[in-house]
Length: 140
Image (cartoon, rainbow, N blue to C red; front, side, top):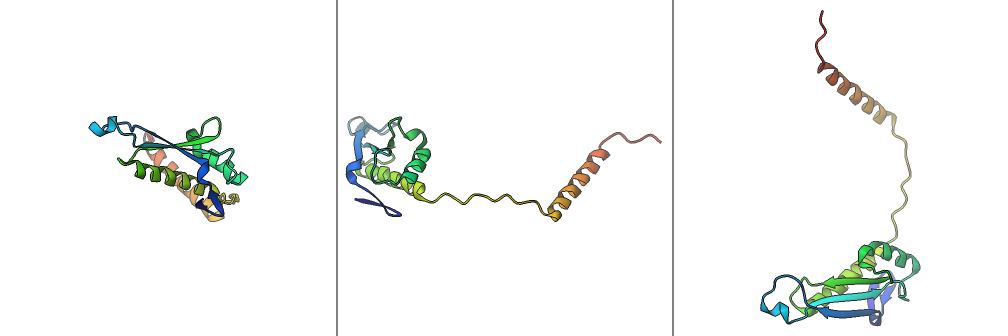
């Protein structure tokens, strides 16, 4: 079991890893060693996630979520397979923790104060006076 936080624990059987060759430059080793990791986690069918967390996680995942509801995280930052595995798992846990946080409270609309209205109108009249001075001088 992997502890995520806020009473959420993932079973390791829910995660599947595949290894592939990392893209980009890397010398002779990159063409023969599969160090990149693709971590897959089925968000829609996971018994570990409560329903509100599942819904927020699907929104947070964006295009990393397949149409079947599987979250795919690819890690290839490091040269070693083990470090890429840890990186992919950590990125998944960060995403789940962000989804587990309660949503922020709704904003209550407030009315502007009298002082703020007066300052706004005073600034508008000052700006209008500056623009009026830019015109042609009156012929007298």
